[in-house]
Image 1 (tube, rainbow, N blue to C red):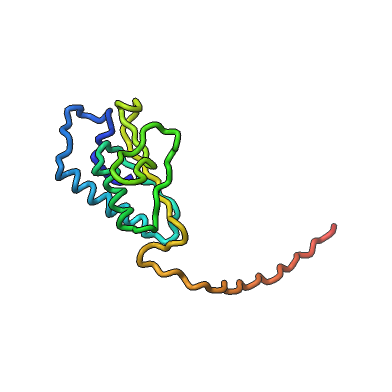
Image 2: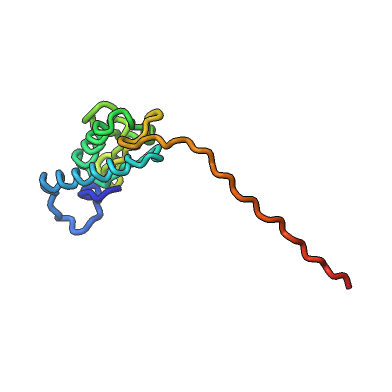
Length: 152
C-alpha cells in the first residue's frame, strides 16, 4: 500500500480539498512503480497484493500495467475476489482481474487491489538461481548425565 493521492478517502478533512494536479499524480505513480518493482525483485516472493486508496487510473491500472510490462512474463495478475462486482478499468488485457471500489459504485471508501503472482519457475530479474548445496551435518548434543536420586 504505497503512498497515494488518497482520492478514495471520502471522510478526509477538509472536504474542500482540491484534486491532485496531473504533475502530482505522475510523481506519485512514478514512486508507486519503483516501490512495486522493488517488491517484486525479492527472489522468494510468490504473491504480492498491490493496493491504493486512490480512484485514479494513473495510480492503479497504469502502475500495474507498466510494472507487468517491465517484468516480462515473470508475474501475472490473479483474479482478486472474483465475486466483487467492480473490476479494474479496461486499460490493458487482464485488468479485469483487479478490483475497484468507490463511494458511488459500492458505497465504500475508494480503493484498488491487484494481486500479482510469480508465473512458473521464473526467478526475479537479475537473480541467479542458488546452487544446490547439501546441508552441513549438525553436531549431536552430548548425552546428558543423569543425577542419582537419593532415597531416604
